[in-house]
Image 1 (cartoon, rainbow, N blue to C red):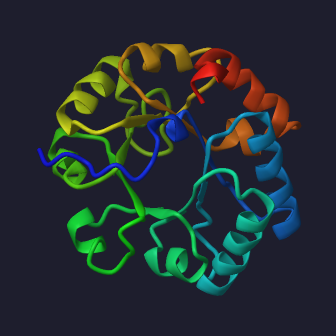
Image 2 (cartoon, rainbow, N blue to C red):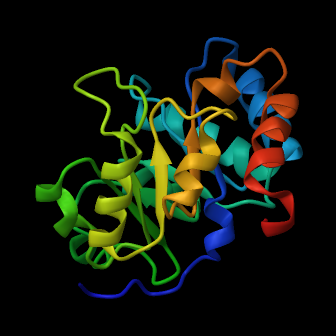
Length: 207
């Protein structure tokens, strides 16, 4: 397995906040993201599957202005990440292909949910592994399988899928560098308080 090139502090993976929707507009989403970062989120991933590239660029630039203190990655859209001067991309394309078109500084993450997807990790800076506890489609893989896949990938791993403050410690014990969360942060009445609940488990001293 090719080792990852260090482009980020693994501590930035401790609590990855993944956006959900523009139900309250761009300002509302940015406000929720800023609150999550104030509460301890260490990275933002912009994931808005139904929005146009133009809207994504607008949202990404607004996030960069509002929360410049944490890395900002785009989901599946390297072109938007480049246009918005983001820090990287989370994509399932081979990192070697992406490296041809993105700056050397770019953070690249990929998703892994099964052993036949482990090859995606080659050249990536981190992997998101799951769904660990819950899934919209398919079956949850569980903590033991997460640990096995993380070992096979050989790069920092983030646990995704049904993560809560109650179960986050179990994936850390299984070797996770951190967790990635959508609804538990962005659908929370108070994203700052929700992030603090995660950080109380994940360890604020390790951010």
